[in-house]
Amino acid sequence: MKTVSELVENVDARIVGSVGNLEGNVHGISIDSRNVENGWMYAALSGTQVDGHGFIEQAIEKGAIAILCSHIPQPEKENIVYIVVENVIQTLGNICGNFFDHPDRQLKLIGTTGTNGKTTVSTLLFTLFSGMGNTCGLISTVENRIGENIFPSTHTTPDIVSLYRLLDQMVEAGCDYCFMEVSSHAIHQSRIAGLEFAGALFTNITHDHLDYHGTFDNYIKAKKKFFDDLPSAAFAITNKDDKNGMVMLQNTQAAKYTYALRSSADFTVRILEGDFEGTHLQINNQDVWVGLVGEFNAYNLILVYAAAFLLTDGEDDLAVRISSLPRVSGRFETIVGPNKITAIVDYAHTPDALQNVIETINAIRKNNVRLITIVGCGGNRDAEKRPEMAKIASRLSDRVIFTSDNPRNEDPELILDQMQAGVEGQYYKKTLRITDRKEAIKAASMIAEPGDVILIAGKGHETYQEIKGIKHSFDDKKIITELFKQLI
Image (cartoon, rainbow, N blue to C red; front, side, top):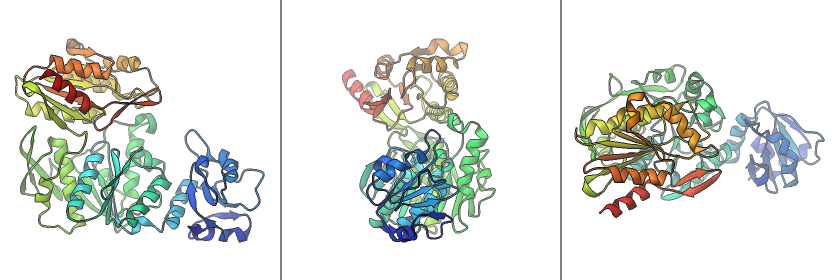
């Protein structure tokens, strides 16, 4: 609980209303007028579809005593403090910092951004540092965690108030670190406004979210802004092998570090050998065997190593600790069925991620082993990647089944039409179209021969399928596991 005057400390704002009301106690903050309670502050955000200023009166009726806004609606209400600012969301970050006593300054906050790998890197860091005796927090696409307590995740990066509240809970629980995914949407929408990061990590950047950002250049700029805003006391680590990796460091004040597999860098990794069980790596000239598979995971692991090295001042046994890290849910998870048929469940939902996973499988499997790929594309998301993903799958797999992912409010048949348009003529005969995802997985298990590999791509850790606004229970791992039992 804070007074209004405490909340606006060091905030550039025009205060409208009774001066006496500045000493009123604010018990909570909300960006949703429906959730406002008596004695709360309401922040009127101007979103892409809804302007929160239109709900100020509703917030006041529900008990708001302070309104953060860019303009005051008429008529002005008595006994209400209006905090008028030029940029509501940026100011809200400062106000949340004041309200929650700046939790980001009381632990080390490490953010990971990029198209692919954010969840894996953040989760592995959480696991690594928890295993080293620290109490840690995790904010990810899969789940949010405070120590051993798990909370559901609805967004890759929560809204700004929820984020500060979550960080405050981590501080209350004694967390030393918080490892979080930072999405391009969150950066562009200033959901991380006011937060002081101790470190920022960049994985890679490829085709994704162009439905939101409009152009690839805008997408790059959104990622770069995260690094531009870092304080000088922070560190920034980028992927030197990514053609846009060094762009991230151009204007940052943070200490700059690089990692790479194909070039010289501050932190390097080499792949010595691997199979579906794991990979033999050389991390900064130290040989380790890890349970994670593929080149993309080699990049993830060297980034984890680099961040951990900087956070621990180069602890001696980091490579040994990394060798014992488990796989992340829905990321190249293997399930072995009858006749040594191997199913791989992976979240790959972008062209680059799908290509990485398939190429990893192809590098491991023997010549007489076939790859059957099941893939779909989500509805109400970037439609431009649909034909590209189908093109990649049909070119690199022996058999492909196009199916539904999370169609959301789109017609799944139209999504599949757009996917199939990307299949090159010479590969069309090896493709099937089965809209029902469960039937598609069943068909793959039936046509698979001894030793074959089935890749089920796109949903990974998700335990639902979203259709027309309703989330139906659906888990790729459970379905293929049950189907394998029936084949025994």
